Amino acid sequence: MAKARELKRRIRSISSTRQITKTMEMVATSRLKKAQDRVVAARPYAAALAEVIGDLYAPELAERFPLLRRPAADAVGRRPTAVVLITSNRGLCGGFNANLIREARRRLQELEGQGGAGGAGATELHLVGKKGVAYFRFTRRPVTSQRIDIGDRPTPQHAAQLITPLMTRFAQGELDAVEIVFAKFNSPMSTPPTVLRVLPITPPPSDGRTVGRSDGEGRGRSDSPTVRQSRFYILKPSPEAILEALLPLYVNNQMYRALVETAAGEHGARRTAMKNATDSAGDILDVLRRTFNRARQAQITQELAEIVGGAEALKG
Amino acid sequence: MRVTLISPDRSVYDGEATAVQVPAFDGLVGILPGHAPFVALLGEGEVTVNHGGGVGRYDVAGGFVQVAADVVRVVAERADETIKEGV
Image 1 (tube, rainbow over the protein chains, first blue to last red):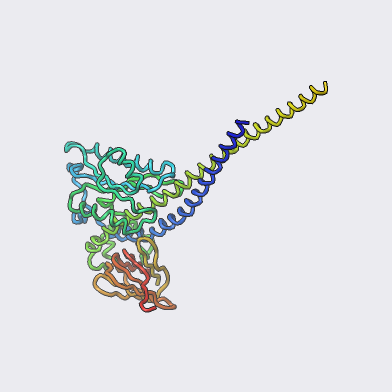
Image 2: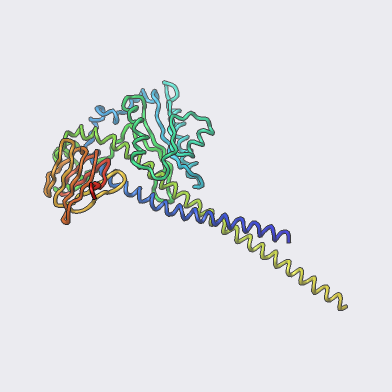
C-alpha cells in the first residue's frame, strides 16, 4: 500500500503544477494578443517614416549627417561599439532570454575580436530587462547602463530615453556604432534573437512605392532617387532639413520596435513553454494514474486470493 | 481625399476627409483635395480634419506630413485627440 500512497501524492502534486502552467499559458495567450496588436499598430508609422527617408536619401548626403557617417575602415574598433541587449523581466519562458543573452555574447565577442592593429575592439553593454541584468551581474562583466523598469508595455518615450544618449554620443564621434540585440517577432512561434545595427543608420531602401504616384505604374522607377524626389514633391523646408529632423525619429522608432517585438516575443515564448509544460504534466499524469490503478488492482486481487485461500483452508 | 494620422504606437485617424489643416514647422497649412505632392516637417499644434459629419481635432508634435495623389499622411511623433475644454 505504501507504493500506492506515494503514487497518489505525486499525482496530486503534478496535477496542481499542471493547473498552474495551464493558467500561465492562458495569461500568456491573452497578453500575447495585446502585445501582437502593438507590434502591428507600430507598423504604419515605421513604414511611412522609412518610405520618406528612403526617398530623400542619397549616398552623397551621408557625409553631411553625423548619424549616417560610417567610421573609416582603418579606424574601426578604435572607439567603442555600444550593444543594447533587450531581455524580459520575467522568466518561465523557455530558452527565450538564454537565446538573447547567447546572441549578445556572441556579438560582443565578434566585435572585440575585430580590433585589428589598434588592439581589441572596445564594446560597451547596455541592458534592458532583469534577466540580462542578472546574467551579466553573475558573470561580472562591466555594464555601462541597465534598466529594468520598462516591462511588457514599452512606449516610444522609453525608446527615446534609451537611445537618445547613445545617439548624441554617436553624433559626437564617441561611438563607432550602436547595435540592438532583440527578439524579432516573426510569429508567436518564431522569435529569433537578432542583431540590428541602428547607428550608423542604414537607409531604408527606396522602393519607388511612393504613395499615389499619379503618373503610373511602370514609369520612373529607374530614375535616381534624388532626381525623382525633387521632381515629384514640394519639400519644405528643404530635403536636407527634413532628413535631418527625421533621421533621429527613425532611430527612435527602430528602438521602439525592438522593444515592442521583444515584449511580444516573450509572451509567445512563454505560451509555448507553458503549453509544453502542461502537455508533459498530462503525459506524466497518465503514466502515474495507470501505475496507481494497477497497484490498487494488484492489491485487491491479492486480498481476494488471501480470502479465498483462507476460506479453502477452513473448509478442508 | 484620404487622411491618415499616425503616431509611433498606433493609427490615430484613418478615413475620408474634405479638408485638413496641419501645423507645419512654419505655420498652418490647409490641404484640400487635389493638393500637389508635398512633404513638410510638422511643428507643434492642432490637426483639424473636416470629414463629412464634422470636425476632428488632434494635438500633434514632431514628424512630417506627406501629400501624394489625394492621400494625406500626417506622421507625428506624438498625436492625441484634443481634449475639449469645458466639457
